[in-house]
Image 1: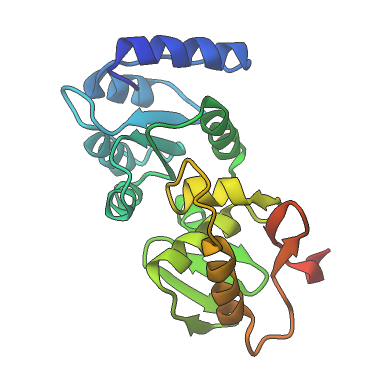
Image 2: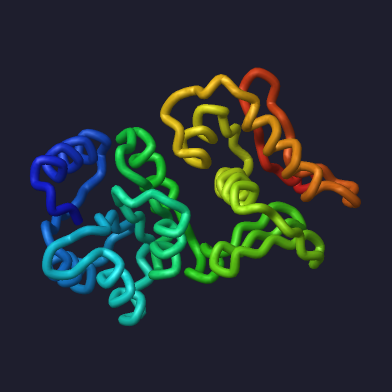
Length: 222
């Protein structure tokens, strides 16, 4: 659902070229009608829509017990904006500007999701658990206190558990940098995070993939 017709035409063409069948709604009321009358694998909703804004639309869908995964697109990309979007019932939040390749990847991930909305709000790797709604982290039942940036870093790593997360991905998605600041900011935060989630625990979960990036994985699970 996108009210910018030029952007909508571009996205529609790109999605179709990627083999994805879609319907387009240019305002919130039309989007609500389509989402309630049809079955979709994923909904991509712009936050700022005419006739009914994106967050109101998502809240209404959830009220009607429609739990189709939702990816929110928005020019509002601060942490508070993302939290508001997730609490409204969104499953993922992608700030503008973005690369279509990342949008497509996120849509594909949401499309593969199974389970209940509650499960989607909680990430688990081994005995480590992150609750996106309450902003709490626990390992083996013990609460771990993280700074906001550490929480966001862990959230992104756990969301992509089992996959290599590159430094560029972290810069863009955790720090909102679209350039390399040429600092060791990532190394410092990863080191701090690792000490907090692995101290006093035997099983490491966060590993460095030399020359590539980082990966969250429960090695004990194979």
